[in-house]
Length: 137
Image (cartoon, rainbow, N blue to C red; front, side, top):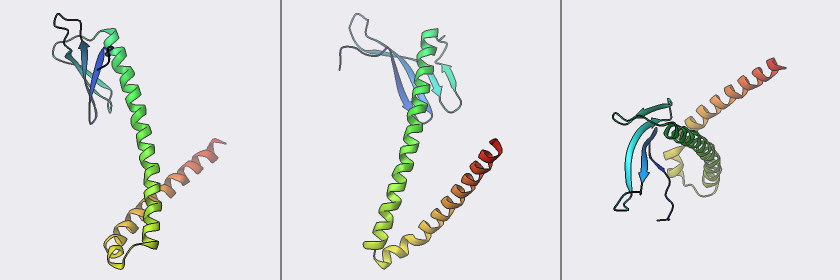
């Protein structure tokens, strides 16, 4: 481990994190992690652990982490969508060049329904954006 540890550690969970204060300033020079809070990034809740009162510094660090985490998750979401486009292209190439009839039979209906559903949503959302843009002018 590096010589300089952060003051806070965030143990990520599905919708937020457990927040720990990191302490190395003890007699044994051990790393101690004291849980100070639980955060939920979906609803913005910050709940102190036990009877703890969070300092202004604690709240600042937690809110900064929450903002950074939400930005990271948003970036991951859009990256996943770009990957989905790549997978669709790879699937098209597979279906056209490599797929056997039995393989196509296994996946064709599911793919057609999923693509129809996606197309319906995308067309509706695009129309909504165009209508909103024309009203804004």
